[in-house]
Image 1 (cartoon, rainbow, N blue to C red):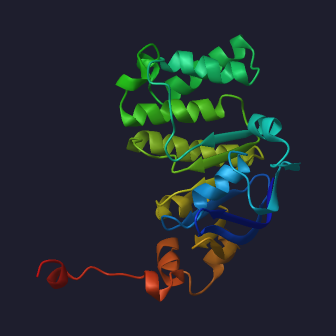
Image 2 (image 1 turned 135 degrees about the horizontal axis):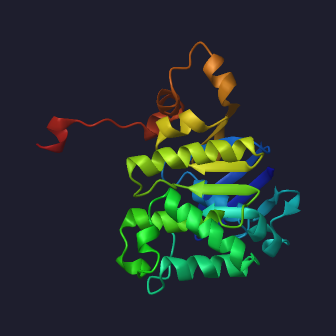
Length: 252
């Protein structure tokens, strides 16, 4: 599970990225973690992955404090970052072999998993080619495979559908739903609100580093005023952030 309590994170000189946030995500839950650009989503997941540290408060992943259990956290978490850095001169098979090796996965097991995911996402023919020559979508498939190769207990996804084709998106959504049924804890950051609504069992909305909504999807959908996640997101946006396009003003 994931547990966050009273987290505050600031960036110099005076940017308050996270303002005293607290939440829990239980095993088997898919949490849609959404907000506008700069709301604090990526900062949150980087704290949960022990990439950066909070200024105050604490976060736990599977009962381990992220501040002093960095290696253990990385072995438990599968993380797809918003903009992943891949080693372009390497081939996917070299990169994925390396990802498996640093996690202590037996060669025969990693080979089988690489073969499975490359077939599932249809990039088997590119396994021997330099990553730098691949399309954006195929690079994303390699990144997803790297995040999942060790069968992690916690899966953290930051805009995971970047560049994926429609068929791969369908496969990915089905896969995430099946992972949740296996009891994995999943946090899903995305601007694709309809996709988030379809697969999430819990919704957290961030605005300017603060949580403005934390509800289970089933409870939201029972509300008589609920008309979709997109509408809810707009309603929760502050007046100062709400903008509409004015054709006459744009093209005076």
